[in-house]
Image (cartoon, rainbow, N blue to C red):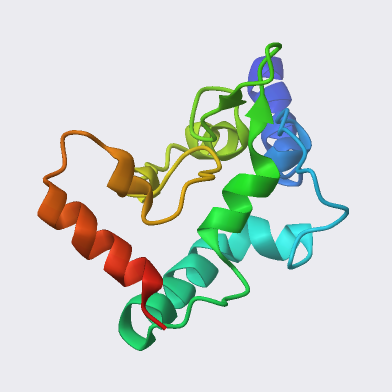
Length: 143
């Protein structure tokens, strides 16, 4: 009975604590995010999907919640100064997504580290045919 009571009390205590309070989430480089932290934790996917639609359907590239900017701000570097992919274990995106069991599919197409080259992140992949690379770069250059 005592074990049950202890488990019941602990469950009640833990439900009042956000997972973000006990996770070691790497901090971004900026002073603050484009939205308050609590809003970004809960709604970042809504923002990304909304802005994806603005980019893909309306051609708008100056968007507030850009995945490229998220990566640029939140990517960490190893001891040699080389960028660690943001979806690698213990990195910004992976920490929360792993804790809550949510799959990230953003980085099947998007770069996991800041990309200093011009064009689409996939345009530097040698396995992609030149015709597809040219198309991706046209998408980036479109107004």
